Length: 400
Image 1 (cartoon, rainbow, N blue to C red):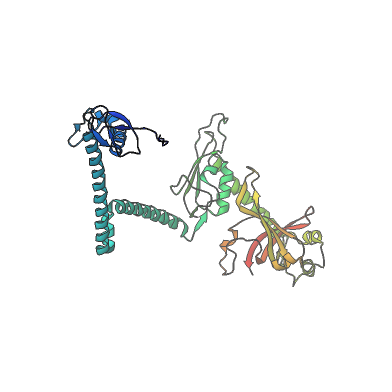
Image 2: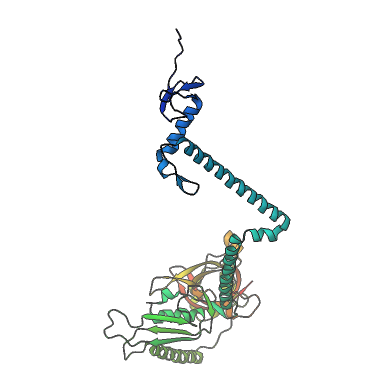
Protein backbone atom coordinates (compact mmCIF):
# COMPACT_ATOMS: atom_id res chain seq x y z
CA UNK A 1 0.00 0.00 0.00
CA UNK A 2 1.38 3.42 -0.93
CA UNK A 3 1.55 5.69 2.13
CA UNK A 4 2.39 8.83 0.03
CA UNK A 5 -0.31 11.47 0.15
CA UNK A 6 -0.82 14.33 -2.25
CA UNK A 7 -3.26 17.14 -2.98
CA UNK A 8 -4.91 17.54 -6.39
CA UNK A 9 -4.58 20.97 -7.98
CA UNK A 10 -6.64 22.61 -10.76
CA UNK A 11 -5.35 22.40 -14.33
CA UNK A 12 -6.63 22.84 -17.88
CA UNK A 13 -6.33 20.38 -20.77
CA UNK A 14 -3.90 21.71 -23.35
CA UNK A 15 -6.04 20.22 -26.16
CA UNK A 16 -9.72 20.80 -25.37
CA UNK A 17 -9.42 23.29 -22.53
CA UNK A 18 -11.41 21.19 -20.07
CA UNK A 19 -11.03 21.98 -16.37
CA UNK A 20 -9.25 19.12 -14.57
CA UNK A 21 -7.65 18.26 -11.23
CA UNK A 22 -4.19 16.65 -11.38
CA UNK A 23 -1.43 15.39 -9.13
CA UNK A 24 1.32 18.06 -9.27
CA UNK A 25 4.02 15.50 -8.44
CA UNK A 26 3.66 13.59 -11.72
CA UNK A 27 4.92 14.71 -15.13
CA UNK A 28 1.99 13.77 -17.41
CA UNK A 29 -1.75 13.30 -17.08
CA UNK A 30 -4.61 12.21 -19.37
CA UNK A 31 -7.68 14.38 -20.01
CA UNK A 32 -10.88 12.69 -18.89
CA UNK A 33 -12.82 14.48 -21.60
CA UNK A 34 -10.81 14.14 -24.81
CA UNK A 35 -8.30 11.45 -23.75
CA UNK A 36 -5.25 13.56 -24.70
CA UNK A 37 -2.10 13.16 -22.63
CA UNK A 38 -0.47 16.45 -21.57
CA UNK A 39 2.32 17.75 -19.37
CA UNK A 40 1.01 18.57 -15.89
CA UNK A 41 3.09 21.77 -15.61
CA UNK A 42 1.65 23.05 -18.90
CA UNK A 43 -1.90 22.25 -17.76
CA UNK A 44 -1.40 24.24 -14.50
CA UNK A 45 0.19 27.10 -16.44
CA UNK A 46 -2.75 27.20 -18.86
CA UNK A 47 -5.17 27.55 -15.95
CA UNK A 48 -3.15 30.47 -14.48
CA UNK A 49 -3.20 32.25 -17.85
CA UNK A 50 -6.93 31.60 -18.18
CA UNK A 51 -7.59 33.11 -14.76
CA UNK A 52 -5.55 36.23 -15.59
CA UNK A 53 -6.73 36.91 -19.12
CA UNK A 54 -9.73 34.88 -20.26
CA UNK A 55 -11.95 36.33 -17.54
CA UNK A 56 -12.06 39.55 -19.56
CA UNK A 57 -11.18 37.97 -22.92
CA UNK A 58 -14.13 39.56 -24.66
CA UNK A 59 -12.56 43.01 -24.03
CA UNK A 60 -8.96 42.12 -25.01
CA UNK A 61 -7.82 43.59 -28.32
CA UNK A 62 -4.52 42.82 -30.00
CA UNK A 63 -2.93 43.54 -33.37
CA UNK A 64 -5.37 45.70 -35.34
CA UNK A 65 -8.11 45.35 -32.69
CA UNK A 66 -9.06 41.71 -33.44
CA UNK A 67 -11.09 40.42 -30.50
CA UNK A 68 -10.20 37.15 -28.88
CA UNK A 69 -12.88 34.51 -28.99
CA UNK A 70 -13.31 33.20 -25.44
CA UNK A 71 -14.05 29.65 -26.55
CA UNK A 72 -11.00 28.95 -28.44
CA UNK A 73 -8.93 30.57 -26.27
CA UNK A 74 -5.66 29.16 -25.23
CA UNK A 75 -3.63 30.02 -28.32
CA UNK A 76 -5.10 33.54 -28.53
CA UNK A 77 -4.44 34.27 -24.86
CA UNK A 78 -0.88 32.96 -25.07
CA UNK A 79 -0.28 34.95 -28.23
CA UNK A 80 -1.63 38.15 -26.63
CA UNK A 81 0.41 37.63 -23.48
CA UNK A 82 3.62 37.03 -25.42
CA UNK A 83 3.00 39.99 -27.75
CA UNK A 84 2.43 42.29 -24.80
CA UNK A 85 5.63 41.18 -23.08
CA UNK A 86 7.58 41.51 -26.31
CA UNK A 87 6.26 45.05 -26.92
CA UNK A 88 7.16 46.12 -23.37
CA UNK A 89 10.68 44.76 -23.78
CA UNK A 90 11.06 46.52 -27.14
CA UNK A 91 9.87 49.81 -25.59
CA UNK A 92 12.34 49.55 -22.72
CA UNK A 93 15.14 48.72 -25.14
CA UNK A 94 14.24 51.70 -27.32
CA UNK A 95 14.27 54.06 -24.29
CA UNK A 96 17.61 52.66 -23.17
CA UNK A 97 19.14 53.26 -26.60
CA UNK A 98 17.76 56.83 -26.65
CA UNK A 99 19.31 57.56 -23.25
CA UNK A 100 22.65 56.17 -24.37
CA UNK A 101 22.53 58.15 -27.61
CA UNK A 102 21.64 61.35 -25.70
CA UNK A 103 24.48 60.80 -23.24
CA UNK A 104 26.89 60.27 -26.13
CA UNK A 105 25.76 63.48 -27.85
CA UNK A 106 26.25 65.45 -24.61
CA UNK A 107 29.67 63.86 -24.08
CA UNK A 108 30.81 64.88 -27.55
CA UNK A 109 29.08 68.27 -27.72
CA UNK A 110 29.79 69.45 -24.15
CA UNK A 111 27.78 72.19 -22.43
CA UNK A 112 26.14 73.40 -25.65
CA UNK A 113 24.79 69.93 -26.35
CA UNK A 114 23.54 69.66 -22.76
CA UNK A 115 21.54 72.87 -23.21
CA UNK A 116 20.13 71.81 -26.57
CA UNK A 117 19.11 68.39 -25.27
CA UNK A 118 17.21 69.98 -22.35
CA UNK A 119 15.59 72.96 -24.04
CA UNK A 120 12.17 72.05 -22.63
CA UNK A 121 13.58 72.74 -19.14
CA UNK A 122 16.14 75.44 -19.92
CA UNK A 123 13.84 77.87 -21.76
CA UNK A 124 11.20 78.22 -18.98
CA UNK A 125 13.99 78.49 -16.39
CA UNK A 126 15.74 81.26 -18.31
CA UNK A 127 12.49 83.18 -18.74
CA UNK A 128 11.84 82.94 -15.00
CA UNK A 129 15.36 84.17 -14.12
CA UNK A 130 15.12 87.09 -16.56
CA UNK A 131 11.71 88.15 -15.21
CA UNK A 132 12.92 87.93 -11.60
CA UNK A 133 16.09 89.92 -12.38
CA UNK A 134 14.04 92.62 -14.12
CA UNK A 135 11.69 92.98 -11.13
CA UNK A 136 14.62 93.14 -8.71
CA UNK A 137 16.31 95.78 -10.86
CA UNK A 138 13.19 97.96 -10.89
CA UNK A 139 12.77 97.58 -7.13
CA UNK A 140 16.44 98.38 -6.49
CA UNK A 141 16.28 101.40 -8.77
CA UNK A 142 13.17 102.74 -7.05
CA UNK A 143 14.72 102.19 -3.62
CA UNK A 144 18.05 103.78 -4.57
CA UNK A 145 16.30 106.83 -6.02
CA UNK A 146 14.64 107.38 -2.66
CA UNK A 147 17.56 106.54 -0.37
CA UNK A 148 20.61 107.76 -2.29
CA UNK A 149 19.53 111.41 -2.24
CA UNK A 150 21.49 113.50 0.28
CA UNK A 151 18.28 115.15 1.52
CA UNK A 152 16.41 111.88 2.07
CA UNK A 153 14.80 111.53 5.50
CA UNK A 154 12.61 108.82 7.02
CA UNK A 155 8.83 109.10 7.06
CA UNK A 156 7.80 109.10 10.77
CA UNK A 157 4.37 107.53 10.12
CA UNK A 158 2.94 105.07 7.61
CA UNK A 159 0.08 106.06 5.29
CA UNK A 160 -2.29 103.79 7.22
CA UNK A 161 -1.36 105.53 10.49
CA UNK A 162 -1.90 108.97 8.95
CA UNK A 163 -5.35 108.23 7.47
CA UNK A 164 -7.91 109.01 10.20
CA UNK A 165 -5.39 110.82 12.43
CA UNK A 166 -5.58 114.47 13.50
CA UNK A 167 -4.16 117.04 11.08
CA UNK A 168 -2.20 119.02 13.69
CA UNK A 169 -0.61 115.86 15.10
CA UNK A 170 0.48 114.58 11.68
CA UNK A 171 1.82 117.96 10.54
CA UNK A 172 3.78 118.27 13.76
CA UNK A 173 5.31 114.79 13.23
CA UNK A 174 6.20 115.54 9.61
CA UNK A 175 7.74 118.92 10.44
CA UNK A 176 9.62 117.43 13.38
CA UNK A 177 11.04 114.76 11.05
CA UNK A 178 12.33 117.53 8.77
CA UNK A 179 9.81 117.76 5.90
CA UNK A 180 9.49 121.31 4.54
CA UNK A 181 6.82 121.32 1.82
CA UNK A 182 3.53 120.36 3.54
CA UNK A 183 0.20 121.55 2.20
CA UNK A 184 -3.16 120.83 3.87
CA UNK A 185 -6.42 121.07 1.91
CA UNK A 186 -9.81 121.34 3.71
CA UNK A 187 -12.55 119.18 2.14
CA UNK A 188 -15.40 121.33 3.61
CA UNK A 189 -17.66 118.27 3.70
CA UNK A 190 -18.91 118.28 7.31
CA UNK A 191 -22.37 119.34 8.44
CA UNK A 192 -22.66 117.94 11.98
CA UNK A 193 -19.23 116.41 12.53
CA UNK A 194 -20.60 113.18 13.99
CA UNK A 195 -19.26 110.49 11.66
CA UNK A 196 -16.11 112.39 10.83
CA UNK A 197 -14.32 114.92 13.05
CA UNK A 198 -12.97 118.26 11.97
CA UNK A 199 -9.31 117.92 11.16
CA UNK A 200 -9.51 114.14 10.56
CA UNK A 201 -7.28 113.22 7.62
CA UNK A 202 -8.96 111.52 4.65
CA UNK A 203 -5.95 111.03 2.35
CA UNK A 204 -2.28 111.94 1.90
CA UNK A 205 -0.02 112.13 -1.13
CA UNK A 206 3.80 112.30 -0.87
CA UNK A 207 5.34 113.04 -4.28
CA UNK A 208 2.67 110.89 -5.92
CA UNK A 209 2.91 108.04 -3.37
CA UNK A 210 -0.38 107.34 -1.61
CA UNK A 211 0.79 104.19 0.17
CA UNK A 212 4.06 104.10 2.10
CA UNK A 213 5.49 102.60 5.25
CA UNK A 214 6.96 104.11 8.39
CA UNK A 215 10.70 104.59 7.93
CA UNK A 216 10.51 104.81 4.12
CA UNK A 217 12.80 107.56 2.86
CA UNK A 218 11.71 110.65 0.91
CA UNK A 219 13.41 113.92 0.00
CA UNK A 220 12.87 116.51 2.74
CA UNK A 221 11.46 118.87 0.06
CA UNK A 222 8.93 116.29 -1.17
CA UNK A 223 5.53 117.78 -1.95
CA UNK A 224 3.14 116.49 0.73
CA UNK A 225 -0.59 117.12 0.22
CA UNK A 226 -2.99 116.29 3.07
CA UNK A 227 -6.77 116.33 2.56
CA UNK A 228 -8.81 116.55 5.75
CA UNK A 229 -12.47 116.81 6.81
CA UNK A 230 -13.71 120.30 7.75
CA UNK A 231 -16.83 122.44 8.06
CA UNK A 232 -17.63 124.73 5.10
CA UNK A 233 -16.70 127.92 6.97
CA UNK A 234 -13.69 126.49 8.77
CA UNK A 235 -10.10 126.21 7.60
CA UNK A 236 -7.98 124.40 10.17
CA UNK A 237 -4.82 124.79 8.16
CA UNK A 238 -5.20 128.58 7.94
CA UNK A 239 -5.99 128.74 11.64
CA UNK A 240 -2.91 126.72 12.40
CA UNK A 241 -0.76 129.07 10.33
CA UNK A 242 -2.36 132.11 11.93
CA UNK A 243 -1.84 130.62 15.39
CA UNK A 244 1.80 129.95 14.55
CA UNK A 245 2.29 133.54 13.38
CA UNK A 246 0.60 134.88 16.54
CA UNK A 247 2.70 132.63 18.77
CA UNK A 248 5.83 133.61 16.85
CA UNK A 249 5.07 137.33 17.27
CA UNK A 250 4.36 136.90 20.98
CA UNK A 251 7.54 134.91 21.36
CA UNK A 252 9.52 137.64 19.60
CA UNK A 253 7.93 140.31 21.78
CA UNK A 254 8.65 138.28 24.92
CA UNK A 255 12.23 137.59 23.91
CA UNK A 256 12.72 141.30 23.10
CA UNK A 257 11.47 142.24 26.56
CA UNK A 258 13.75 139.65 28.16
CA UNK A 259 16.69 140.99 26.21
CA UNK A 260 15.87 144.48 27.46
CA UNK A 261 15.64 143.36 31.11
CA UNK A 262 18.15 140.48 31.33
CA UNK A 263 21.63 140.82 29.88
CA UNK A 264 22.95 137.83 27.88
CA UNK A 265 25.15 135.64 30.06
CA UNK A 266 28.21 133.72 28.93
CA UNK A 267 28.28 129.94 28.54
CA UNK A 268 28.79 128.20 31.89
CA UNK A 269 31.58 125.59 32.03
CA UNK A 270 33.36 123.87 34.91
CA UNK A 271 36.36 126.11 34.19
CA UNK A 272 34.50 129.41 34.70
CA UNK A 273 31.89 128.35 37.30
CA UNK A 274 32.98 126.79 40.61
CA UNK A 275 29.44 125.70 41.54
CA UNK A 276 29.03 123.84 38.22
CA UNK A 277 32.50 122.29 38.65
CA UNK A 278 31.46 120.89 42.05
CA UNK A 279 28.30 119.35 40.56
CA UNK A 280 30.23 117.64 37.79
CA UNK A 281 32.89 116.32 40.18
CA UNK A 282 30.49 114.88 42.80
CA UNK A 283 31.40 117.49 45.41
CA UNK A 284 27.83 118.81 45.49
CA UNK A 285 24.31 117.56 44.72
CA UNK A 286 22.48 120.83 45.14
CA UNK A 287 20.95 120.71 41.65
CA UNK A 288 17.94 122.77 42.73
CA UNK A 289 19.98 125.76 43.87
CA UNK A 290 22.19 125.67 40.78
CA UNK A 291 19.10 125.59 38.52
CA UNK A 292 17.44 128.52 40.34
CA UNK A 293 20.57 130.62 39.95
CA UNK A 294 21.12 129.77 36.28
CA UNK A 295 17.71 129.02 34.72
CA UNK A 296 17.71 130.10 31.06
CA UNK A 297 21.50 130.14 30.90
CA UNK A 298 23.68 127.92 28.72
CA UNK A 299 25.91 125.13 30.06
CA UNK A 300 28.61 123.24 28.20
CA UNK A 301 30.39 120.12 29.47
CA UNK A 302 31.71 116.63 28.63
CA UNK A 303 29.01 114.03 29.07
CA UNK A 304 27.55 110.80 27.75
CA UNK A 305 24.11 109.48 26.75
CA UNK A 306 23.60 106.99 29.56
CA UNK A 307 20.06 105.97 28.55
CA UNK A 308 17.43 106.71 25.91
CA UNK A 309 13.85 105.57 25.32
CA UNK A 310 10.99 106.35 22.94
CA UNK A 311 8.43 108.91 24.02
CA UNK A 312 4.63 108.45 23.81
CA UNK A 313 2.29 110.81 21.97
CA UNK A 314 -0.11 112.38 24.46
CA UNK A 315 -2.95 112.62 21.90
CA UNK A 316 -2.92 109.10 20.45
CA UNK A 317 -1.12 107.11 23.13
CA UNK A 318 1.12 105.64 20.42
CA UNK A 319 4.87 105.31 20.81
CA UNK A 320 6.81 107.91 18.81
CA UNK A 321 9.25 105.80 16.82
CA UNK A 322 11.70 108.65 16.12
CA UNK A 323 11.33 110.70 19.30
CA UNK A 324 13.40 109.99 22.39
CA UNK A 325 13.89 111.00 26.00
CA UNK A 326 17.60 111.12 26.96
CA UNK A 327 19.35 110.80 30.30
CA UNK A 328 22.68 112.67 30.29
CA UNK A 329 25.52 111.92 32.71
CA UNK A 330 28.64 113.97 33.23
CA UNK A 331 31.86 112.19 32.22
CA UNK A 332 32.46 109.08 30.13
CA UNK A 333 30.03 106.20 29.65
CA UNK A 334 32.67 103.71 30.81
CA UNK A 335 32.69 105.49 34.19
CA UNK A 336 28.89 105.48 34.30
CA UNK A 337 28.86 101.70 34.00
CA UNK A 338 31.39 101.47 36.84
CA UNK A 339 29.35 103.84 39.03
CA UNK A 340 32.09 106.48 39.17
CA UNK A 341 29.89 109.49 38.23
CA UNK A 342 26.73 111.19 39.47
CA UNK A 343 23.49 109.31 38.80
CA UNK A 344 21.76 111.05 35.88
CA UNK A 345 21.60 114.71 36.93
CA UNK A 346 20.48 115.95 33.45
CA UNK A 347 17.50 115.02 31.28
CA UNK A 348 16.28 115.92 27.76
CA UNK A 349 12.53 115.29 27.68
CA UNK A 350 12.16 114.88 23.91
CA UNK A 351 14.42 114.98 20.90
CA UNK A 352 14.19 113.67 17.34
CA UNK A 353 16.64 110.89 16.38
CA UNK A 354 18.01 112.98 13.47
CA UNK A 355 17.87 116.33 15.28
CA UNK A 356 21.62 116.87 15.33
CA UNK A 357 22.21 116.10 11.64
CA UNK A 358 21.96 119.84 10.82
CA UNK A 359 25.54 120.47 11.99
CA UNK A 360 28.43 120.09 9.57
CA UNK A 361 31.37 119.20 11.85
CA UNK A 362 33.03 115.90 11.01
CA UNK A 363 32.38 114.49 14.47
CA UNK A 364 28.81 115.75 14.81
CA UNK A 365 26.32 113.06 15.86
CA UNK A 366 24.36 111.84 12.83
CA UNK A 367 22.25 109.36 14.78
CA UNK A 368 21.59 109.30 18.51
CA UNK A 369 22.88 106.21 20.29
CA UNK A 370 22.92 105.09 23.88
CA UNK A 371 26.43 104.87 25.34
CA UNK A 372 28.24 107.47 23.20
CA UNK A 373 30.43 110.18 24.77
CA UNK A 374 29.54 113.74 23.79
CA UNK A 375 30.36 117.41 24.30
CA UNK A 376 26.94 118.99 24.95
CA UNK A 377 25.78 122.60 24.84
CA UNK A 378 22.30 123.07 26.34
CA UNK A 379 19.91 125.56 27.91
CA UNK A 380 18.83 125.07 31.54
CA UNK A 381 15.01 124.78 31.67
CA UNK A 382 13.99 123.76 35.20
CA UNK A 383 14.65 121.50 38.17
CA UNK A 384 12.57 118.32 38.63
CA UNK A 385 12.29 117.74 42.38
CA UNK A 386 10.62 114.33 41.95
CA UNK A 387 13.53 112.91 39.98
CA UNK A 388 16.23 115.22 41.36
CA UNK A 389 17.23 116.15 37.80
CA UNK A 390 17.98 119.26 35.79
CA UNK A 391 15.84 119.49 32.65
CA UNK A 392 17.81 120.86 29.70
CA UNK A 393 17.18 121.74 26.05
CA UNK A 394 20.00 120.64 23.69
CA UNK A 395 21.58 123.25 21.46
CA UNK A 396 24.47 121.22 20.16
CA UNK A 397 25.94 117.78 20.75
CA UNK A 398 29.30 116.70 19.34
CA UNK A 399 30.65 113.18 19.61
CA UNK A 400 33.89 112.94 21.57
